[in-house]
Image 1 (cartoon, one colour):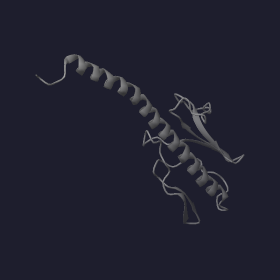
Image 2: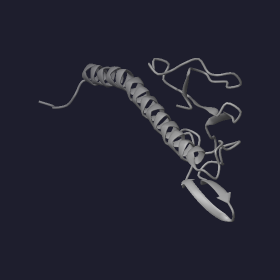
Image 3: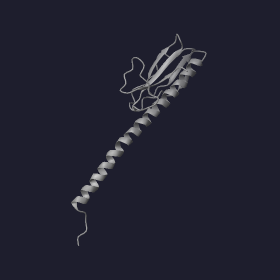
Image 4: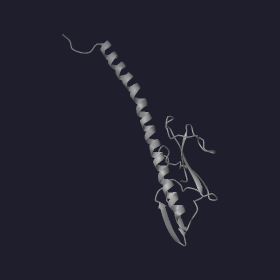
Length: 144
């Protein structure tokens, strides 16, 4: 008596494995999107804290005109002394060259920080502020 698998048994196993992988891969991709969105939100809150420290410094009672490039420090030089508020400004987790959207109004002492979200079902997603083009919604942090 020969032992082995028939062609039908092999096809059934391949079909089941294909079906399971077809169901699991999209869930895995969505989990990665949610993780990157969580990183974006955390990054914006960290930048927000650094900007508040920057503004509360008596030597510079306004916000910086622009965020530094990715992985560069957020600093201010006053009377020859450089003060570091953030050692590395984070980049978008999907694109290490793109920095987050930032606009400041030093007349009203307000600012807006935004990041494009990947997950369309994110409860924190809002319509993007003017001038920002995203595929989905944005996560936005304003001056508290």
